[in-house]
Every structure is written in C-alpha cells, then in structure tokens.
Image 1 (tube, rainbow, N blue to C red):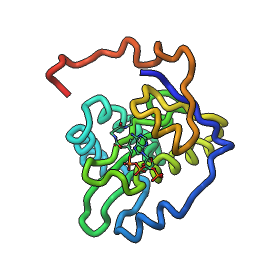
Image 2: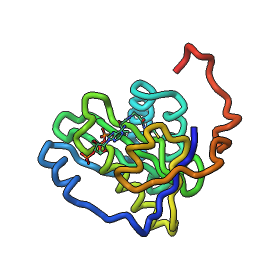
Image 3: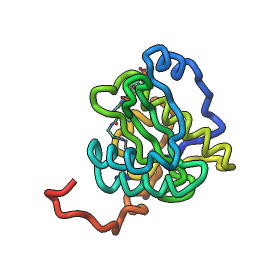
Length: 164
Ligand SMILES: CC(C)(COP(=O)(O)OP(=O)(O)OC[C@H]1O[C@@H](n2cnc3c(N)ncnc32)[C@H](O)[C@@H]1OP(=O)(O)O)[C@@H](O)C(=O)NCCC(=O)NCCS
C-alpha cells in the first residue's frame, strides 16, 4: 500500500459533476454530528471497521472532516470521503456503494475534499494507502510517492483475517 501526492494548485473546481448528480437526485454535503452513528455504521457495513474508525475521527472536528453523497428523497447514503483525518493533509478513506459507482460520485467527493484541504492551507494532499492508483491519477493527476511502501499504516493493528 503506497501513498500518492496531489498538487492542489493544479486542481480545477468542476461544478458540472455535482450538477449532474443533482439531476439524479444525489446531493453532496458535509455531515453533521447527529449523523455520526448512522454514517459510521454505514461505512462499517459497506467497507470496514477500520474506515469506520477513521470516519469517527472526522466527526470529532467542527466542521466535520468529511463529505458525503446522499440520495436526498430516499434518505440514503451512497458515498463518503474523509480529509485531514488519519494524518494531517491526508485524503481518505473514501468509498461509494457498489450500486452507485460510475456516476461521478467518487470524483465529486474527492474534489470537495481536496478543496477543503486547500482551504485549510495545504499546498499538496497525500492520498494514504491507495488502492485504485489509476483512478487517482486520472481524476486529479496524483502520483505515487517513491518509498511510501512503509507508511503510516505500516504497523497498524489488524483484525484476524476473517474479520472485516
Ligand atoms: C474508487 C471509488 C471511490 C470511485 O467511485 P465512483 O463513484 O465509482 O467513481 P466516479 O464515477 O466518480 O469515477 C470518476 C472517473 O474515474 C474513473 N474510475 C473510477 N474507478 C476507477 C478505477 N478503479 N480505475 C481507474 N479509473 C476509475 C471513472 O471511469 C470516471 O472516469 P470519467 O470521468 O472519464 O468518466 C469507488 O470505486 C469505490 O468506492 N471503490 C471501493 C473503495 C476504494 O477503493 N476506495 C479508495 C481507497 S484509497
């Protein structure tokens, strides 16, 4: 699991992605404290207990260090992205529910989060412990950080293999 770096000066804000989502009834917004339980359970169910823990840390800040995507009418969460959470300047974790992928939700959440990091004063963002390298390279021009195989997750305590 390597990390990637993104030059925040090169990120162009693209509202068209969110407008497209709105026309599908999907809104992108910051969650608020009363949603901590529902959001962290949703992340644990769809992804992992580790990501749920990271999300709970995002909720310890005001405003919350996370963006979510939601089907507004159905009152249903479809994606999330944390920033400045597990380490300063980090993007992630992030995830979109399987049935909602391929609509631009991941990209909208990523762009929102990178702009939040820029507003906080960062010049570069680090995407920690990347899975889909090609996705980050394509959407925001991220590049793998040489030597980042040993990163912040190196000695992290892991659950037994049968546990998510
Ligand atoms: C990665 C993930 C968040 C992407 O979400 P998504 O909503 O499906 O992505 P989008 O629809 O916004 O895709 C934006 C663009 O990236 C492309 N893309 C999406 N996933 C990709 C992948 N794995 N590899 C390369 N390109 C990818 C899309 O084709 C799209 O391209 P386009 O703008 O030319 O149409 C989602 O697949 C996911 O939740 N994966 C599991 C969790 C995960 O791996 N999280 C990242 C941990 S570091």
